[in-house]
Image (cartoon, rainbow over all chains, first blue to last red; front, side, top):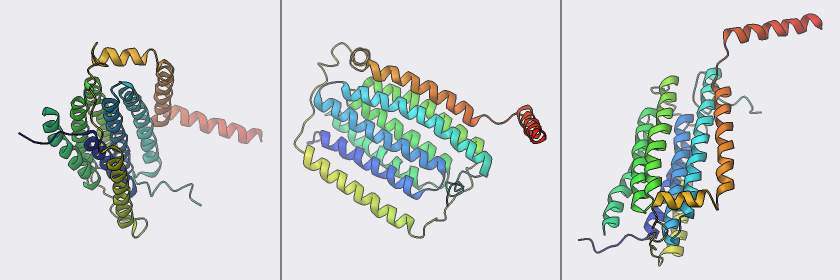
Length: 104
Length: 186
């Protein structure tokens, strides 16, 4: 039907593109929550790369690493959202530009 | 064959939804696009013989973490307020250029390094089942990182509770009392 078989390079390139989109999201957006979602996107792009390498190398170590990334991302999401909530209590805004009290 | 078809469907969905995450003006829309993105990635994980990770991605990420995100967005009520102005005048253009440069570099490197490589088969590693294989690795080779993970989760849970907990009336009152007491002593 399709004379083309998907190769590891396809998955790796997809992961790289998703990661770059996440980077652009962090750089352009000012809403702390959307920046946070972009970070999640980057973590997931890396996960895709790990799983692709796992299949390339024919062992499960890459999947175990992706599993750890998911756990760390969950912990990071919880703490990050708590920080955003507590900043919002102080500044009444979720914009990262408002959180500039430490700026000289 | 089926792998290729699944990739050709789920890959563009992942890419498109990722673009919509960073382009939607409404934070709730971003979160919904992120859920679609995570689901597409879960499909790709299953496509790559990582069945357990696919299911975990679906339940933990698309389920639990995204509900937490949506909950915070709704709680803060930042849905309508959109912050479109730029702090630095040409920030958006420059970051777009940097993003394209990063993507180009990564793609070029990956294509050069892995153009010829082919997929192996995970049939050997998955022979006893994907979950069993992962469990065996987790509790032998990766036992130490696995234990450290539990500490991380406890610290994260306690930290989140302390950070997000508001001050109760009593506490604020007692703090004022204590401070005034110090003043008297001074």
